Length: 102
Length: 505
Image 1 (cartoon, rainbow over the protein chains, first blue to last red):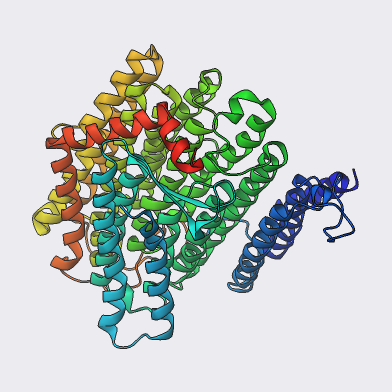
Image 2 (cartoon, rainbow over the protein chains, first blue to last red):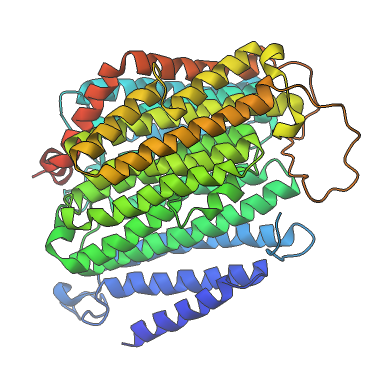
C-alpha cells in the first residue's frame, strides 16, 4: 500500500510538471516519472510478500525477486542519461520556454 | 545455421561505433566502418530470409542460459524480411549522408552504427524488456543525430522528439512492469496467449501497445511526428522515418499476434483508430506547402494503412500489411531522399520557391515520380500490389467502410503528390526575389546549412534512384515478396512455431 501511494503521488507530480512550459520543469517531471515507474517495477516483483534476500535467514522461496531489481537498474541508467541530455537541451537556446512555434 | 551468429548483427555495429569514437582518422576509415556492417547486415538479412522461407524459426539463447531465464534472439520470416529492408535503408541513407558530406561530422558515423545495432536488436529480440532496451539504444543516437546539425530549429525539433519518446518509453516500461507483476515473465514466448486468457495481462499489454502506437504516430497521438521530422537534415529524416516508427509497427504486429493470440474481440478498436489515422494524415498533408511537411503527413496516413493489416487479422490482411510495410519503408525513404537531394542543392523545400526542376533535373524528377506514384498506389509499382491486396483483404473481411476510406485516401494522396510535382518540378521557376526582410511568418525554410549549388550531384541523387528502382522491381516481381509475406503472416496466425523456438518447448 505504501508503494502504491508513493507511486501515485510521484506520477501525479510528474504529470503536473511535464505539462508546464519550461524545459527544466519538464525535465524534473521526467525525473519524478522515472522514479515512479521504477517503484512500479519493484512492486511488480511482489515486494509486499517477499523478504530481504539473506542466505540462511530467509528461505529462497520468500526472498526478494532479483529480476525486477535488475530491470529497474537498467531503467535508472537509461533515464539518467536522457535526463542529462534533456538538461543540455534546456540550456541551449535563448530560454527554456517550450511554448510557441519553433 | 549456427544460431549463435544472430547476436553478431548487434555486436558488429556496436564494435564499429566504439572503434570510430576512438579513431577518427583517416577519413575513409569512418566511411568504410559505417558502410561495412550494413552491407554485412544486408547480406545476413537476405540469407536469413532464405533460411526461414520454408517456415523454420531460428532462436538463440544469449550466453546459453537455460530457457526461461535467457534472453532469446529469434529470426523468422517476418523479422528476417524486416532486417533485410532496414539494412537496405541504412545502407542507402548512409551513402546519401556520405554524398552530402554529413559523415564528415565527427560523431555521425558512430551514431548511425549504434542506431542500426538498436534496430536489429529490436527486430530480433524475443523479450519485452529487451525490446525496451533496444528501442532506447535506437533512440539515444537519434537524439544526437537530430541535434548534430547544430541549428536552433534542429534543437527545438529535438526537444519535442526527446520529450515524446521519453514519455512513451516510460509508459512502455510501466506496461512491462504491469505484465511482469501479473504474469511473472516478460519473455514473449512464455506470454503466448496470456492476454487472451487473463484480462489483467491484457491491461498490462494494452499499456505496452498504447506506448507503441504513440511511437508509430497513430492519430490522435500523431502531432509530434510532424514537428520532429521536419527539423533535421534530409539524410537523418530519411533514416529515422524509415526505421523508428517501423520498428514499433513490427512490435505491434508481433505482440498482438503472440501475446493476444489475435483476439478478435479487440480488433474493432484498431479498425477505428487506423482508419481515422489514414484520413487525418492525408488531410493534414493538404494544408502544407513544403515538400518535407507534406511527406511527413503522408507517412502518418500510410501508417494507418500498414496497421490495418493487424486490425483485420486475417491471413490476407496480415500478408497485405507486411507487404505494405516493406513497400512503404522503401518508397518513403526514396521520396525523402529525392526531395532531400533537391533541398540539399537548392537550399529549400518550399514549393513556392522551387520550379522547373523536371527540365533541370530529369533523373531526380523521374525518381520522385516513380516513388510518388508508387505511394499513391499506381501500377506497375509496389504500391499498387500493396493497396490492392490490402483493400481486397478489407472487402474479404466485410469491412466495406474501411476499404472505401482506403481507396478515397489514395486519391487524395495522388492529389498531393501531384501538388509537389506541379509545384517543384513542372511550374515556372519563381522570380529571383530579394531576401525576405523579416524572418517571421512564412519563413519555414528548411535549409541544410549548405551553400546553394547549381545542379544535383550524381552521388546525391543515386540513393533515391536506387530505391525507386527497388519499388519498380518489387512491383513487377511482386510474387516473391508476396510469398514471403504470406509465410510471415502464417507465423503470426499460428504462433506455435515461434513460441516453440523461443521457449525451447
